[in-house]
Image (cartoon, each protein chain N blue to C red):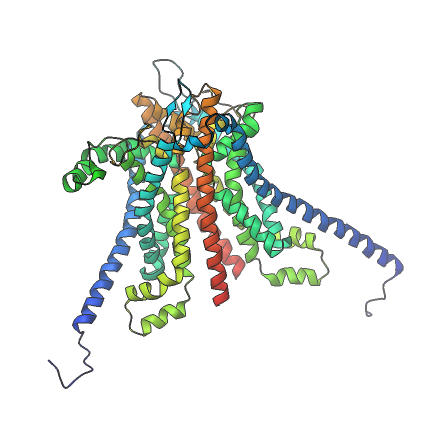
Length: 294
Length: 325
């Protein structure tokens, strides 16, 4: 229309089409993000609305009722068991993970560092049920099921997470500090133990709590290592102890609806713990990262 | 007040002793940490060795024919893996097919178009989805998703797309369809978070150059961001595939635990990981157990293959990026 103004600012038909395409694609991306959030909300809502009814003081403090017609009671044995198993796993995974990270960060030549990281990545991608079979052959065949065996299985799951988190924090320690330490004539091991580790400890521990949150919810590795359990509350790591994920799994196999209710309540406890720990340690991790990189 | 005195002989001795202590300390730190690193590598090797060892009776009995045999008969002690390989491949492939584009969409939203405040909140929520334990997802799958598929989604798909072989037969509480949905939910966060890292690694100046040339945001994404991250996206999707293949607990609760090779998503089936999880405790016979471990061995090979491929792609991609900078 406007022949005398070739540089009109009015959108041409093509520009309008491009803008519509852009809008549509942006809308699709927003939809994808909302779908993921919707999935999270749906799961949380279902667990909360079906689980809260069975939650009571007794639920946390009583073992399950053992009578034949009697399916009430709590999950105290599973709560204690999960604490013991995860504590075992942390005791194994935390020192090993930190040492691996120190090795790759301080000593390893580039090629070996890549190789170790590769092994950790493979370990991280390993199906958890395969790790269960591994520990079954390694420990359970000879010594029977126990919380320690379950802890070893979970520790293998946690190891790459702890090592990775530690590597990331170590990399954030300002190189000026270690150079200052070296310039003062301090040896390498004293620099690591006295300067680098104290600075990064906060970050390492929050990374570890994230790994704990993941391990606490795992079922598959415990099926082979710590599943033949009793309803007694026990703190002995040499016994096979019940755990919360396994309680849910086994309650589901049972046709008794009272046990299904117990499963929902146990799921609520587990999910609340895992989500709370995840959120808190992510916040703490972001903070310690900011503090270190300042 | 004087300049530092020249070192006395005694001082030198002290210094010498400290140096010896430091040498030992450095050596010890090196030794302990290197041993830890070797342990990590050893564990990977030991896992493979231990699985082969436990599966050996079945390997001897059935050989490689195990993977193409459809038998699973604990009474006649005749076992094969084909049905489970099919179930694993079918459900994982479909889950990746759905989760891949969704995850890329989420990652693009988080890295390219979301305002800063929204970005943090939605990003955290998507990560929290990854934190929900699989047994809880399975519980939800069997009591909430199952009935929904049976009552609403299944009949709806049948009405609208019933002419396709994927939606033949009657919807049920369990089957491939709920398994695919559960797997999609479980691999979505990991794929999205890797993809997001990739998109954030695209240099800002290239993106801004495209926008300055008059590209719309989507044209900038299509012309700059996606080509820049192509290889990495393949790796992100393969990591998701690895997760889907290895997931046992949530799948075993919703897939129906039955033998069979079906196209229809309404049918029941089983996967490698799910069969191991559901039968390990009840298996009385050595050959039965060994066959289950053989399934685990197939699973291990599958997951190692996808993981190694993904890692190699990621690594090559990282080098390209470092080289380009």
